Each structure stands twice: as C-alpha cells, then as structure tokens.
Image (cartoon, rainbow, N blue to C red):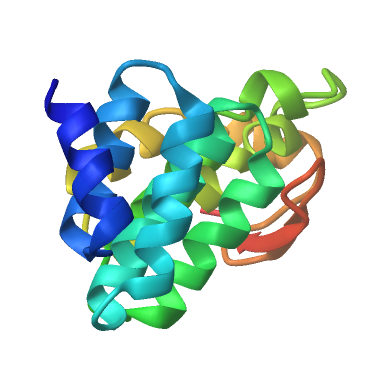
Length: 170
C-alpha cells in the first residue's frame, strides 16, 4: 500500500526523497527494474551533489549485484567525483576488487593472483575502512610469493583482469 501511495504521489509531484526511498524499497523486494527506474528519477531531481552521489552508489550496487563490475566501478567513481566527502564509493570499489580473486586468478603465481587484495587495500584506505583494510592485508601475497616472481617492496605492479589498475607491492 505504501509503495502504491508513494508511486501515486511521485507521479504528481516529483520528490527526490520519495523517489530514492521507492527505489530502495523495490531493491529490497528484488524488483530491480522498478528500483532502477526510481533511482534514475531520483538522480535527475537530486537537490545537490551529496544526494546525487548517494543515488550513484545505489545504482552501482545494482550493477554489482548483476555482475557488471566495470559498470559498478564507473558509477562508484562518478559518486566519488560528485561528492569527494562520500567515502562509501571508495569502499564499494574496494569491495569489488576484494571479491574478484576467483574471477581474476590465473593460478600461475600467488603474487599476481593476490594483487587484487593489494589494490582493494588501497581503496579501503581511501575510505578509511580499517576493518576491511585488515581483511585485505591478511590476504596479501607472502614474502615468498613476492620473492618467487622477483618483485620487490614498493614496486608498482599492474593488476590485470577487468581491474586494469596499478598498485604497490608490500
């Protein structure tokens, strides 16, 4: 009933808060199509950059849920650019990278396979997410893994797969 009333009110008088909340409620109920519709509406009428960033993060979460990691990352980056004070966008990118180990591992060497945790750590540090930084750090490549591929501490390495960014060996 609340959703029906909210939709009726929003149809007559567009409201950012209502559109965002409708999107959240539909997302919670796994109606992704309606959630996307209301998030798009909310983004168009958002009163300021913090609100736009909030909606971009919600849209990125939908893309991530669908498995579109590159699209999700781009939406999170847009959120970070829109509102530099919103650190959640960096944490979400860190989550994407942290959860990409199985997608990105090549099983050739642990140093390269575990580089996803190094770059996830970088984004968690930007977000100030200390617990997640700790989780990433516990999955860093070991000294032996780094030695076996002739990497050295402080060296820049490229993380492949869909990530395509560089990080530092530590």
